[in-house]
Length: 635
Image 1: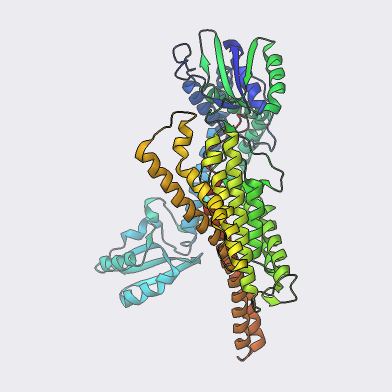
Image 2: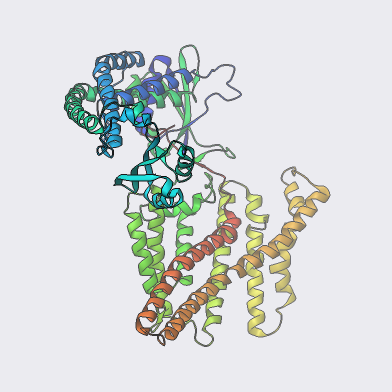
């Protein structure tokens, strides 16, 4: 990664920013820091960003009005000043406003006619003018609709005091006319309201017989449909006339908006602008050539390497398509710093090894891989497709594990390695699990030593509990333990003093040792307490981190035990009527539960071992992701 600083003339700023957006390889930083605040000011771009947003909304409205669809590929758009775009959009709006307004008014009338027809259709059998219905001297009419489920309850509750005529049943609702005496009006309306009746007072909106109103509305509807089609054709013709132009304006406004947003990071003087950011070293030379081409050699480009201890240097993670999905497992914890070893390849490999051992079954692994393949090939969001890819790899790892242990949908076959439920094999598997833990913990410490050297923090590389001293202590303790297990007696005191006492003393004396080369950050009692706590934490963490990997073997045994339980239940189900069908159902449902539930639990356990036992040795996760400015993405 290279730090880039560009000095350009103010008149070239917009086209330089656009060229950098097309290049899409520069991670902008704030060019106006505390030291330069006196000489540089920030461009006032907020108003331009807001103006672009307003014009974008206007262009989108015009595209909807003229039925102009967004193309799959972005259209080519040359630079055009924002005031010119505003003027053209206002002109297009004036030209298309009248036919659009007429079409909208016609649409409103069509909706009103549809409402009229919907209301009057059910009452066509009433041979009484709708305005006369409320005028009967002794009778009260209630017209409207009610849910069919409520209709019968209403009729039972109303009893003989109310006469109800069902005019139409449609989509779960019934249109009715309920009739009572004038004295019984309030009682009837109270019962109707309690059952969700929705009144439709036709006399307030229409006059005449319902049949006449219906025929008039139907005829009017047909005429308006023909007129609406004429306006639609006119608007589509205007869309063909202005469509490409509107798409170019939308594209240009998006570009302008992103350019103005990016320029808020720049520094400005009366006639020049300063742009700063990070660029991959491999792209720096090509960027320089492009910059000189755009400005006609009117630019100054300075490049430098990151300074020792410089913070916030962005990290660019580059992996092949097969490895890239495992970056998701890293990003949920943190992001690697610029000088940290990028751990994706280690995490991906170890995750698959642990998952394959804990979920070892050829058949269940095949199902998991197929489900992952469907998700990875879908049109879901990118992170979901990455999860699908991880599921494919995890399924393949489970199939390998199933071959080693001899399991196919819980059924046993001759294993390539261990029969899990046989004799002393469980203890063998637990021993291998501890061996995996030793490897992962040791790898974490080695990676931490490398990271410390890359940061030029040689004290942490040698005297830290997760440095060389800690690694000697860890392997010394393992060696002494192995010698005791083999020989049956404690090893010599000299060897123990060198392998265990030596690292402990170096860590305890870390502050005095470092004070020979530089003034320590703190000393006295605090330093001794901190060193003592480091030694204690080293004892506890190395032991707990290593033993924690026993869960790999434990979950492998639990997986096999669940399969035994499923087939035991299936054997019991065979004694039931239709026993073969019942047993098959138990086996299928049991395998589904194992794939779904245990697959999730095993995944969580794998991540726990990665995050708490492995990452804590070397990975801080405090880095900044490399996010280059691009015209195709938001700033």
